[in-house]
Image (cartoon, rainbow, N blue to C red):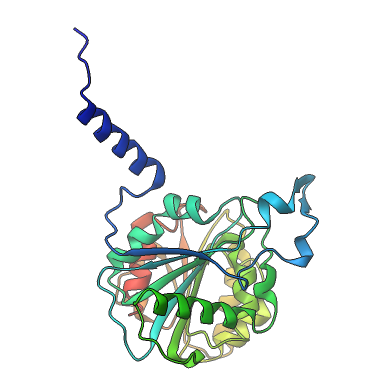
Length: 290
């Protein structure tokens, strides 16, 4: 017998489908803010005519015109003298929305308990490109931090006061091609923490200069086939030879206590796209950095 759905049931089903499609089914109870910034990555003059990679053309209108910035403020956030801003940068073929869904970024952020604000500027949208746009220019990232601070003040999350960069404790994190924009920022702006998910393809000189500071926290998780294996070991070797304390370890050997080491280079047997969600790594890396 065919059962006829009531309007209430149909509405409930529609809500469930919408939540599943948007990724909102995860139990985030914090606040989302989305805005555009003149100091985000794009548009940028070096991609005004688009970009071609491996014979595929990525036009500017589709891939390099979105200046969106997503902010997520967890439910338990409480302003302190210094506000920890955790910036995330996506890899190839992704965008803010697909990356948040695929890797459960805001869900893991909420669950981590870190008293911080998650900030996600749009990158090369759905493109095979690591270019960091305007954020590769000196001082532009700092202007973006100011924009984020003002937006948080506007929404009553931070008290209104004159912008000073040292009011913020800055962390940078990302996946895959995110290494490039992170490497261009770390030595131009005070950055305390870097977390790389199978992303150490290059930028070695910049990373090594930043790593020379004993107080800087660094986690690099790499895989066998993601393209970062040899370079991760090279960087680890260089750090060790410089007498900088480093934990070189396999993922299955790591517990929360070991993750509190300042410099961790970790091998994962998982795939390039698995390392963020496996063992809820994003959540636990955030939690142990508090």
